[in-house]
Image (cartoon, rainbow, N blue to C red; front, side):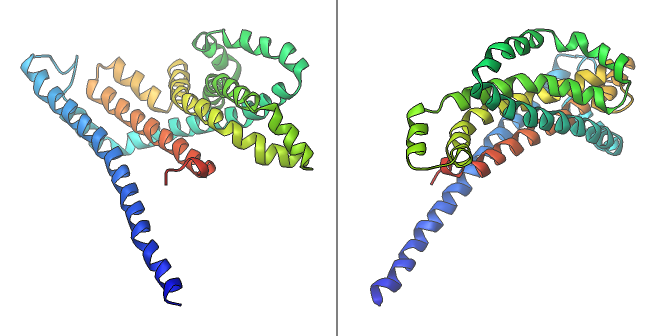
Length: 273
């Protein structure tokens, strides 16, 4: 009775140590980037006036952070528009490319027939065809989402194909010999084995997603951070331009952290003890 009661008590310090270790890791992951940015912005604030660089060429951080605060309502509304385009285009690419990657790997004939066509269209510069989307679909949401989708599609597709192909065939023979159905093999063997590769592609696509949305807004838009950037450039409003760049960077960082959190959630076996 005494030994069984002592066992849970002995595990409490170990659990506490693990929690404190995770907390220190999270604090370190946040503190070091913040310290680096603080040093960079401090040097920027000090060196620009020292070099006598005018504001219409390069503003100091205090100027565009002040503009970010004073115009926060307007910038926030445009940020929501761009974030919506990024999320929709990224999700569309994930929903289409991951299943397509599995189908192409599973059917050899499709890999020979369809994949070269996909590569051919991928070689066409997306920026060059962005004006066509405006002509075809107008200045609304869809052309920006479509351009974001096209930029995110190929990295996710290639990563998905690599992941589904990476599984050792002997593992599949073993699951069949144990009586596993095709669905059970797909759910419990193929998908977990491919997730590492899939998330590598999704992380690359998360970077491209912001680029696709901004390029689409550059070509034709009446809202979004790309629209604000063009408006600031027209009037040489450098504080507004850099304020939009800060807002866009925040959106990109948050989006990357969301993808990382999904990876931890869907791949619990890779969590550190």
